[in-house]
Image 1: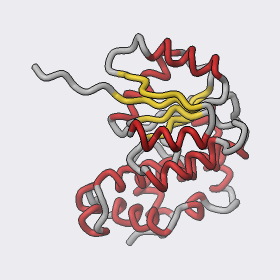
Image 2: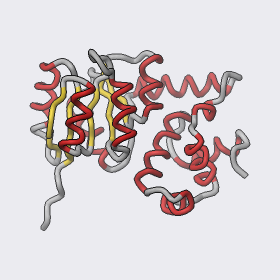
Image 3: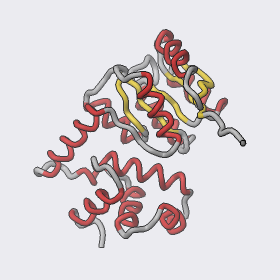
Image 4: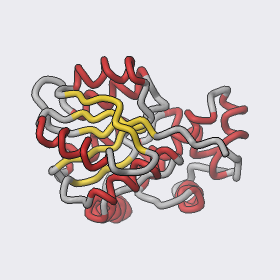
Amino acid sequence: MEMEEAIKVLLVDDHEMVRIGLAAVLGTEDGIEVVGEAGSGEEGIRLAQEYNPDVVLMDLVMDGMDGIETTKQLMKQYPDIKVIVLTSYLDDEKMYPVIEAGAFSYLLKTSRASEVADAIRAAARGQSVLESQVASKMMNRFRNNAKGESPAYKELTEREMEVLRLLAQGKSNQDIADQLIIGIKTVKFHVTNILAKLGVEDRTQAAIYAYKNGLAE
């Protein structure tokens, strides 16, 4: 039986001891391989080109280029990479910008090693993971928007709005890819961003949101 390839992970954190600890822990996990370690955002972008990782485990606060800007640059250059934020910060000024930049999942450094490993495996399957406190904050933001603040869909890009409208029509990822002439992985990336920005859990809730807000026919 042919064995599945290991999920290639790149660590980006300016604390060497954090990288050493993560590499040691993830090295014991089946199906996960740490292919490189970067001590800065700039180095992370360079190593992403060199190692072509499936997942980047990203710190937020670093000297030089921070995790938000690094995520933006990675998404521009390598949109298929899944960025998982692993940070000590839960404030809105950092959390929402990095999610909007394209972060796939958001975890706190208080997470258990098994939770980080599970998030990496989920990302490889195209599934996002949000730490419970992060999910709670996003839902509160969604509720506040519903009370009259700027609606969440205002944060969607033009392309994400197109995907949302087609999603609300019941189109599959392949249908959306064919209609917009983009790759299937790009569609999945947009859908993940849409769910995060709208604060909903799945495609069905996103479609309901679209109809409630007059975004779909």
